[in-house]
Image (cartoon, rainbow, N blue to C red; front, side, top):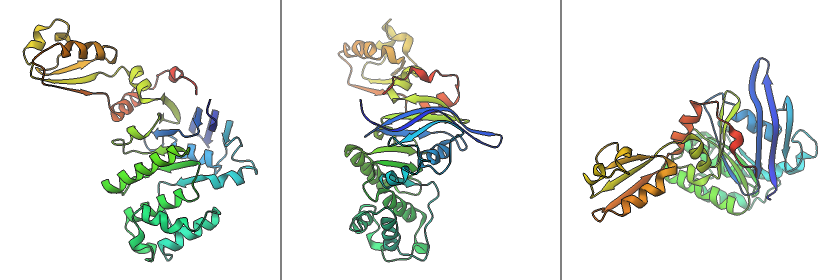
Length: 306
């Protein structure tokens, strides 16, 4: 069993009359990437602040690297944490190089990383320019470089791809994959769902401070029972004449199939000699997200423990 870098047990957090988080349970293992999703006000940022020790839980257990983030002993472990807030803000008069050097000192990170990280996020050309001259996308890149300082073992990234162009977004996810392969645990909080699913191990969906879904995408697809779309080419009218397939047809060349029947249907289709192509589209993360937000009575206990 992998070490749990983050452990949340029955965590609750209220702001006066607002229940920001209710009975949250989570185990995040070393080298695991969790996608954290939910609408504005769902509790995502509050959860990150609890993990960082910025706010204190009203009740329940919060443990990061085996220590309560509110405990004085947690100070030493914070050097192993990288954090990118949703709204990035820096000292506008400092250059990009000076900003990263300043944060490197705060984290006791090797200052030799600064030029390397600026190059990694594509800001070498602007390293000596004041941050006030940076565009929103450039500030976001600088924020990512700051989060990557010190080779963190835990990364909390709140809307990390906002303001990034497609190339920068791809490079960002390459960095996430590399950090994961080096054993870092990562929480990715994002509203931009396309492109993220291939980089996460599990997803957690929050709504109104409650966890309405937690598990691998495969597990969540099975719970939601969202259909698989299969597109065929070359067999046309023969589909309707097949009693095993006709009931799944939504038009001449498309089948909508329950996940449990997918393999059987594909086997049946492969028996058609006129079949020239076959495309299988599993439910996307966006579809899973919409399903669980519309159905908050899901039993998330169906997820297997780590």
